[in-house]
Image (cartoon, rainbow, N blue to C red; front, side, top):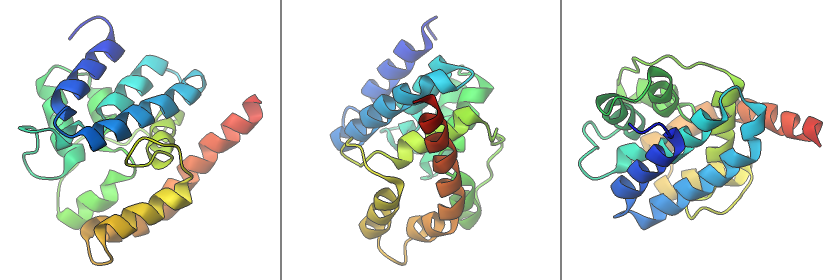
Length: 178
C-alpha cells in the first residue's frame, strides 16, 4: 500500500471496477459526497478511502461469497489494508442486516462513529449513476431495482430506520456547520 491512502484506494477502485462503469460512477459519486463531510470526521483520508472502496466487493475476481461488503473487506485485508478500513467496508450501509439474512458472519465490528455515519450518508445520498439524491429516494430506488421479494429489498426495508438515523445525524452536523 502506498503512503497516500486515498490515491491507493482510488487506484484499486478504478482497476477493480473499471469493467463495471455504472458501479464506478456510483462510487465516484459517493466519494464526492464523502468529501463534502470529510471535515466533520476524525480521519478524513480514511473516510474518502472507504468511499472509494465500499463497493470493491463487486469487482471481477473479488466476489467470493457473493455478498459484496464481506468480499470487499476480505480482499482489502489480503491487500494489507487496516482493520478499520476493512470494518468500514464490511459494515457499510447497515450490512449487518443483510449479512444476518444471508447467514454470513461479519468478523469486523461496526464502529458506530461519525465517520461510519458519514460513509453511510454518502452511499445513501448517491444514485447508481453517481448523482446526488435524498435517502428516501435512494431507498425506494434500491427496492424497485431488486423487486419486492429479493433479500436486498427485505434487508434495506428492515435497515431503513438505522440508515435514516445515520443520515439524520450527518444532516444535523451539516446544518450546524452552516
